[in-house]
Length: 179
Ligand SMILES: Nc1ncnc2c1ncn2[C@@H]1O[C@H](COP(=O)(O)OP(=O)(O)O)[C@@H](O)[C@H]1O
Ligand SMILES: [Mg+2]
Image (cartoon, rainbow, N blue to C red; front, side):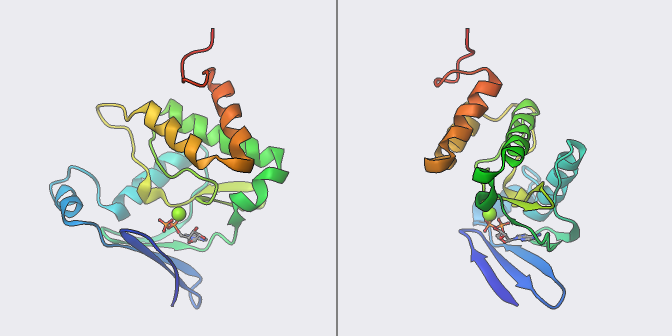
């Protein structure tokens, strides 16, 4: 088993023999309590709920092999990070912006929508890291926060994508509707 990445509250391993990615969650105590009290879905369960919602919107997601509260196993997408491909591909730029606009329209919130959290296979975009997404609840998550996170994620070479996103949403730099 090969360690791929250690996050603040999760770890990702790759099982080469089975060609699977295994993500385990070690949340802080406060979050464990929130899961226990059903205030928020367990990360593994959240991943499944988000995957189903995204698939319904026509956005590809990894195939889930096992979803437990604190353990999630997915099939290897065999893709490359969107980050490596997006600058050279107008078609992928459009797919990425389409996804971001669909999330905004449907109130799907996530603070980690950078181009490292999408993979590309056969020119198709796959959304990964879905445990970090939040599906809409009674009260909508902050649109300003959603856009602020994206503006920070899309820096440097990718900054033009944020400009295009605001254009397509009909918003100015202060996120006000354009006249
Ligand atoms: N199903 C998958 N197929 C291919 N690569 C994956 C898959 N799941 C995770 N990865 C790889 O593992 C990395 C970390 O997974 P991710 O869910 O984004 O964890 P983190 O929350 O630590 O960012 C990804 O950037 C990707 O390279
Ligand atoms: Mg990630």
